[in-house]
Length: 129
Image (cartoon, rainbow, N blue to C red; front, side, top):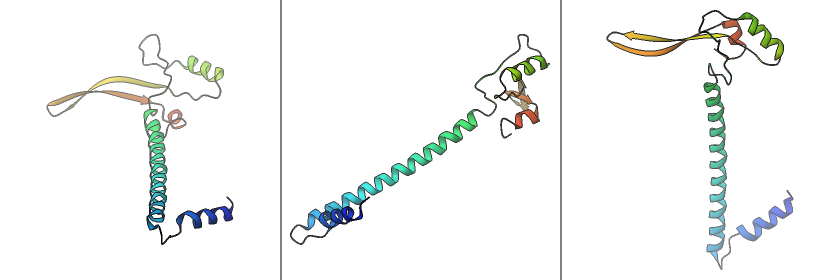
């Protein structure tokens, strides 16, 4: 920005006037208020953007946008389907996994949960596990 213009605006509106001191004080307070408001807005946007990225990273760890299930619930992996998908979509990464429900017991209490089994080499290429 033009330095002469900035100096002109500062001298005209922010200098202390002995006849009307309230005008310069209110201008300085308005300047400080706007500065603090912009600073808080920038800070909150930075925090929210970081939070959104972290939330997205946590959400898509083992919760993928697309999951292909076999027709029958079998534990075996269909290597033919995996090879076919890798040839059809070379720019995508695939990681087979097995999931099952489980009951966890600790003392007298029991709780349900999910167990995931992954191929560590293929999963490491997609997610930081």
